[in-house]
Length: 334
Image (cartoon, rainbow, N blue to C red; front, side, top):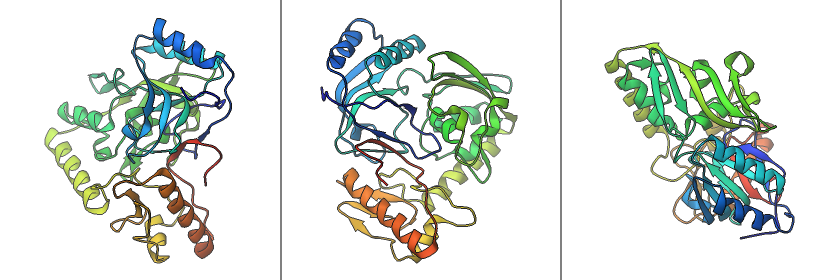
């Protein structure tokens, strides 16, 4: 393992604020305690030295010391407890659709729910889903059962847990508007069911869900016609495909939209559209996206993020806020 580093942060992938997880020195013996735990107590799967490029939509990122698929809620609680005791950082990853992982990797434990936390069911107009469910799967499930309310989320990458923590959505509505409650493990490692009334869902934000492990949620849906839902989904996917560079690996929109402005328009007007560094490029189709043209590194992508922020600040006086999250960098990268 890559011992000798840690950070004292436990966080969720898709939180609304710009998140970065840094590498710092980890106490001696922590790797041994983790190895013992994985061998004796973990019911799920553990992949040591697992390349993060296999698990991020950008297809970049060095190895995580441990990449873990917990099998159940008790697995997560035990894992978080042993990581806290050994001062080992943890990072909850969905399908990596909104994260930039460092080329050096991550000196800690990445916890992923996409293998075992994927059940979804409904009772009447209420949907119960685990947070490892892909958002697209949730959209299709609701469509098949004539449940309206999230059809315009079609084409948004990521998991349901990630969508909740960033309040994903479109101009037609956001996921927070459908929430009844969210079940999670909080900072004190207590299991909590948080009702909608205690969660503030803002633009790409849900502050009360940050720094917590989201397990499952209940959504309140609307009765709808199957065919209408299908048409809306297909229209939304076609719209995204026409406007966004879905043919290349990316993280989606790199920056949040400033009030009254559009990032892509500002970047294009600044003459940056098509700018390339290594194999990373500011998309020709939508200048709010940075794409991996083949073998880009995290460093290549980070170079373009910094370039855009600098130029937009100089030209418009606007401080762009990143929508993607940073994992494994040695300091705040942008």
